[in-house]
Every structure is written in structure tokens, then in C-alpha cells.
Image (cartoon, rainbow, N blue to C red):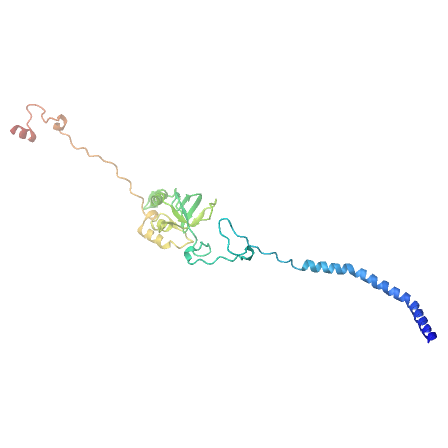
Length: 267
């Protein structure tokens, strides 16, 4: 048995010696491959780390004015900010420009330049729906000219009497002329001017067409004759008598006594 065991041992040792170079080459190849794949694996890990979303930051709600408003009986980080509730009625809602009619601005101390146009608080306003009447315009009715532009401006001034007008204007004054409707209390300023005949309607806007037809039919304002000239001042002087000149009623001794003198002598 010993010779056989010795032979087997020697055969295994020889096979190991013969296979050693092949095993050494395979080990070297495996190690080189592992070194070459290491940078690629690191790059893949870095890309996955960058692509991953960052962890959410902790949402902490702090109490507002803790010295004035008593904080609620819970931890601040448990508070959650929510949208405000709707008002209980439309009265408490803030005005939204896109909802309902636009908000008007009250313009104080208007200065009328011509019938249908004025300036106030930095705004230059032209009433929408009409054409302002120039101050130097002259009208002729029945062949008699008269300065209708000046009279139209005076009529507009007398109607306003310096009272404020409510108009829809931009939030801040601009250098441009704003064409907008204006109200004096419950009255439409443009409607009043056209109805009284002191301004003509805009041909591209038919909102005051009926008022213009009524003023033209009644011959009011620009469509009628000019105001009548004032009658010349005349003074009637009573006829003076000799009695009025003397003041006594007696011119001389031979003159006949008047009725007053006869009555006085009878007494």
C-alpha cells in the first residue's frame, strides 16, 4: 500500500506543477478585469446618486408673533398651513377687477377745457361716446353766426359747478388722454351734454344717438340760434315842470296858485 500511495502523491504533485502556469495566468486576467471595471462601477453609482431626488426638507411651521398671539397647545412642527376659507357673505370679499363692472375713481376739482373734456387729479379725460366741442367753434343758424363753442363750455362748467366726477381710469395718471364715461351722481355727463345739444355724438358710437336726435329736433344748444343779445339799457326821465325846479310851487306873485296852494290857503 505504501508504494501505491506514494505513487499517487507523486502523480498529484506533478499535475499541480504542470497546471501552475495556467492557474497563474487565469488569476492575473481575473485581477486585471476587476481593476478595469472598478471606475465604471463607481461612475454608475455616482450617476444613480445624482439622479435620485434629494430627501425632503423637514417642514417646520413657526408660530407668528409668539409674544402677542398665544401659541396653540401643540408642537410647532405639527402645524400645517392651509388656504384661507371663503367669506361668509359677498360683502366681505375683496374687489376683483375681473369680476363685475370696473371700479370707478372719484376725480375732484375738474377743470373744463371744452364741452366734453376736462382735467382732474393729473388725468386728461374725454367723455366716451361724444366729440368734444372746440372752444373756437362758431355756429350759424338762420344766417346769424354765434360763438357756440364758448357757450357750450360755459354750459358744461355751470352744470358741474366744480363737483367731482366718477370715472373709470387707470390706477395712475398717464400722459395720454383717457376716453371713458363719467357720472355726476346718478347722471351720465356725456348723455347730459348730448341731450342738451352742447356736444355731438361720436359717429362710431351709437350710445347717445337718441339724445342727439331729440336735441336736433328741439333746436337745443349747437342746433339752435344763439342766445339773444341783451336789450340796450334805456332810462325814462319824467318831464320837469317849473314847480319841480323851484321846489316852492310859487314862481311870482301874479302866478295862479296850484291845487296844492289853494288847498293850503283854505285851511
